[in-house]
Amino acid sequence: MLQALPLPEGSVSSKPLLRADNVAVVLLWEQRIECPVFDGNRIRGPVPVLFSDNPEECRMSVEEAGDHFISEIVKMNCR
Image (cartoon, rainbow, N blue to C red; front, side, top):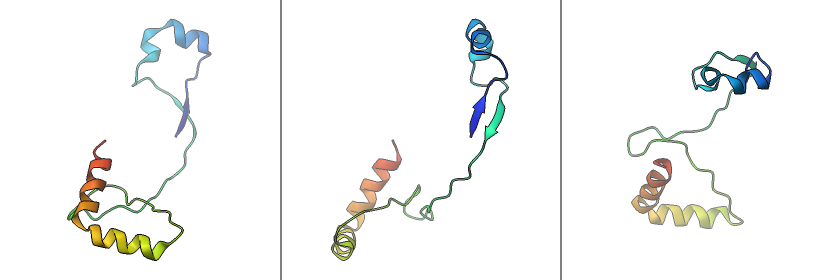
């Protein structure tokens, strides 16, 4: 979401209430974002996109790493 305050910057800066996280805003633009996510059985969060010059070798490496690969993704998603 792209949001704006319905006042000039000078008015916003001079009033601490208008700098709060829950101040009323005007919605200027909204974009739906979709991404694949894990099913939550063994792991939760977005599915990482892996780029490789050799996708088959990459797939085999991930499959061989098994649970270690999943535990590393869990660490990334917890940040």
